Image 1 (cartoon, rainbow, N blue to C red):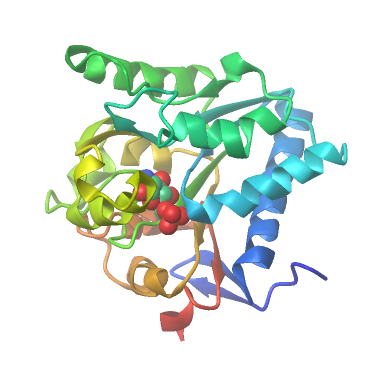
Image 2: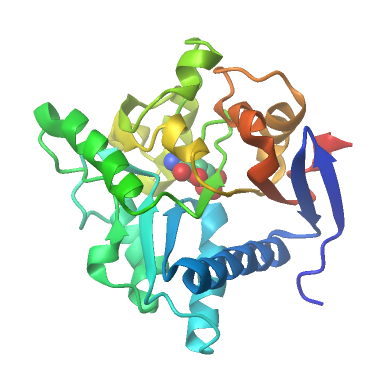
Length: 268
Ligand code: GLP
């Protein structure tokens, strides 16, 4: 079996599936998304997905595109909402998440252009808040997200909801908005900007914690040793706004984590 689970754990009521490497883990994650699409389409006639970017998502999208090529999966009844976008950023910029999604998924499957949504990195700043609020409304009017796909930052961010000291109650209410990027995020993002951190936009539009946690199911992926500490803190540490991924514990029953052995290292 190419994607046989190495071990499965239940931690803080969250399902954690650990695979020997990121290739088999990515395929397993692709299968979770494919199953969600098939079941939502058969029950409701459509599937609505929240999507993530980042290196951890690349092989997942490759697997979904291969299922489409093999005629095992159609995206004709799928609508997507991505988590985040640098601000300001043109959709055509090589580092834009719109570009990333076109390259890795949108241009490879039968997704209609008016069903692939990203926050708009060209919106005038004075209208950024209206645009972000409209984005949350679009998701609600689409019936909510069947599945939210997430990566985790080295600092425990989800989307671009960065560590802060605002407290749990306020963090759980965070809507989609324009947000400042954390120093660790800026350092990690530099690799997409020719290694030059000064070229990384200081801000991004991000789906908020509230709409993320409202999804009917949540799939979190983390690969590599650099994610071991934030993963362990998110699953076994206190729920706190300083580590946004720990807020997933508040909706534990609908969260599935898919990890490789390196990212699971500190889970015991
Ligand atoms: C990025 C994105 C997140 C992503 C995360 C993990 O900064 N804003 O949406 O999921 O960080 O990225 P990676 O998979 O490259 O580690």
